[in-house]
Length: 316
Image 1 (cartoon, helix red, strand yellow):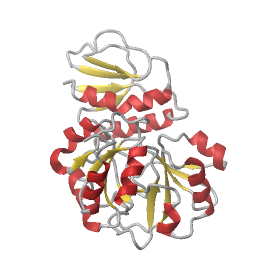
Image 2 (cartoon, one colour; image 1 turned 180 degrees about the vertical axis):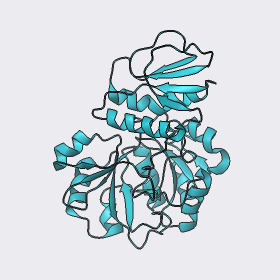
Image 3 (cartoon, helix red, strand yellow; image 1 turned 30 degrees about the horizontal axis):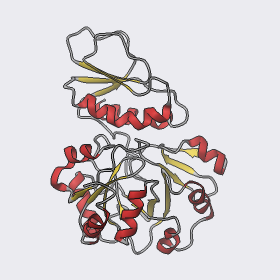
Image 4 (cartoon, one colour; image 1 turned 135 degrees about the horizontal axis):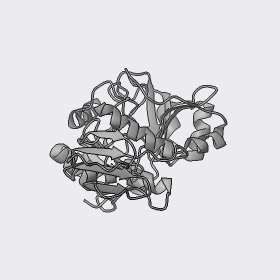
């Protein structure tokens, strides 16, 4: 149903323990009442998500954070004031009100305030914090349109709010700012450069090979069903395979079965917004392999390359 007119019904579903997929500025989230352990368990079941990968809790307003967690560390408060609502997830100590299933047994919790009016309206109408990872099967491409959610999860979701394509197109940046120096645990839609400008030097430590310390940090993740490798457009394939190519700004020479160009203008923000949508189309094009061209490794380009490396790691 439309995101602007389905808020009341979707909020009632959340309060009753159901699952609601909804748009944020990053990707579509699969939401459940974060105070209800059984509802949160439905998220893991619907996504086939391993129980060791924690969820992000979403709030309607930054002012709701102290009411939920108590005293907020100074570094967390500074970044929340600067970047919320927005594509920044912050690590805080898990409050007693949040069931341990939401944090996968960790004594920390990931939390953010989305910069999407319908998402905040939904959370406010539900009257509870909302646990919401991306609304896709675990490890697969994140959804940036409602139809991606329906194709991936089907009737495992009670309500899908359709707000059109998401603005950022990749997930939030995750930062642990409880200590002296902020630590970036996942690259995302908020560039590292913006964090440095606001908080000074930061440590970048994305990726995990064991128990994740934050959502979406496994080394292999965000993958299409079609095998993906990183590489350049030349030479054009000539071995008879149907290969697809994901280009940053220039369409390659003929020979590819399917091609997606992220931004002919070379705009990394536009490229990020189109990334998962382009990969969804290549995944549906019947190609045998996708070759993805890395983008310039600056700004949000670092997050794009991070997603491409994780997708490639799934297949190699």
